[in-house]
Length: 335
Image 1 (cartoon, helix red, strand yellow):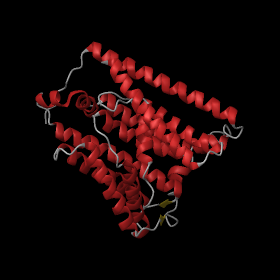
Image 2 (cartoon, rainbow, N blue to C red; image 1 turned 90 degrees about the vertical axis):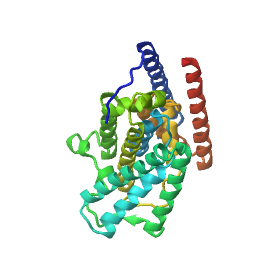
Image 3 (tube, helix red, strand yellow; image 1 turned 180 degrees about the vertical axis):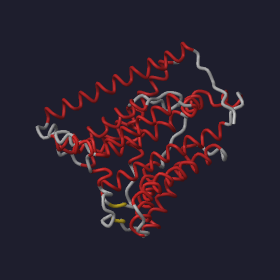
Image 4 (cartoon, rainbow, N blue to C red; image 1 turned 60 degrees about the vertical axis):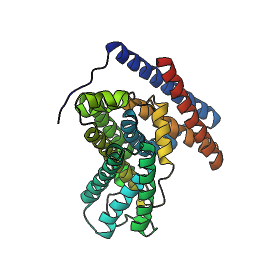
């Protein structure tokens, strides 16, 4: 395998970094404004229990957003992350509840299942030349059906697996500092984010991730096996989705086979809000985390203010449209 790298002109790189920094600052400012606004609107919003609930919700959506970030930077898209998360949770339930195996095997099964599913999506895109939107849409439906078939359309509970719920709902930090009972799910989110940021910024895989999104044909003409790298990136994203499956299953103490649809839209919205370009070639893990926090704060704030569920969905859809429009404006300005 060749490790030829594609150099980006310094002036272009500077513009990309500047644009990304500007978007992250705007996203962070939006997050602060939302926090202040909901705090004024409802005295219950800033309560410790509610803040912990926001962090707990962010742990799942944030991990999904990290996975989606890697794919979108390559110029692709993954609509299957929501149902893939559910499928990984169901497989964990099969391993732990049906097969009665130790918890470590369930964890390995979730991550490995996600990696295999991601590699399949990557193969459809790279080897079969199916557009990412169609390939992952098909995978979304396949995994949704498989989750229902394998589980028999019934939830799989983890009551006989001691400690499983602690993966997400426990607090190692709280045991050391009782005044700071941050859930383990949030700790896992930050660990995943740190590892993903390192991979994206300090490894060959990360460099090819940006290069594929910037100019895939140029990378191919440089002698790089772009198909292999693309499959590897989708597989890595799938493994991260497997972690999200563990978190949601642990949080609910069950694998809900009908869950998952809609999570992919929130993850994509978080990624775009955080400054990742839908055209590929630009994005950061930090920006996606900020975007995930914005989505969690917005959803929680509307719920605290007793806004009807249907209107929450309307607001989420409007944010996705605005986020995509903002990305289009950024691309026009940078070009």
